[in-house]
Amino acid sequence: MKVLVVDDDVVSRMMLMHLIDSCGRYDIVEAEDGADAWQQLAAGLRPAACFCDLRMPRLSGMELLQKVRGDSALAALPFVVVSSANDRDTVELALQAGATGYIVKPFEPAQVRAQLAALDALDAAAPLHAEAPAATLARLGIDADRLQAYLAGFETQLLAARTEIEGLLASGARDEAAVRLERLRGGCAMLGLHGAAALLAEAPATAAALAPALAAVLDMVRRQAQRLRG
Image (cartoon, rainbow, N blue to C red; front, side, top):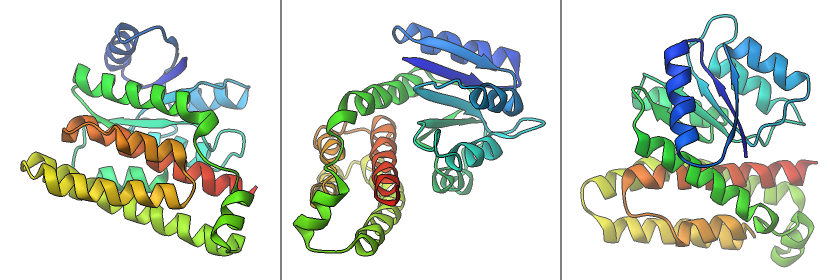
């Protein structure tokens, strides 16, 4: 798997590259800032995932994320935001902009491993991640506009549920968290998101490990919405 690492701070970039390299066989490509990363992507670089710092000169991580999501050839690229900011507003803003995951500096090896595990699972599930939109439309007896609305609503539900479920797990309310996860899994199954449903069925029972799994499911929902539009 080819991974693009973007950070204007050399020490942080090298540390993250080392942690990724220690987690498995990854072909790591580095970029010194968002502008450098965009130049490489525009020239044809197609990584399987991107880990990107949030605050950088020339082109910030958020600006790079917006450019990636606005490019049809790159829109489905898993994009993990890296930042020293860990407040809820910043995290939610990144997720709403299309981030697949979020890692807080200073790096914790467990966080990096969890993100890579979710990306590997997403990559492995890709061929089975969803039924064809036409099949979903026929099965549910709805039109494309209605399915698009369902997917958009489910995306909003996932964004809200992530914080709620992580809070429940952190407080020890695992049974309630399991109920919430089962509801999400049922939504995935109803919408034909088989890979996402499988990820939730095997979701880990800790808040730190669950975050990348939910982010991967969110990415699958967005990919299906793009397939429906395209």
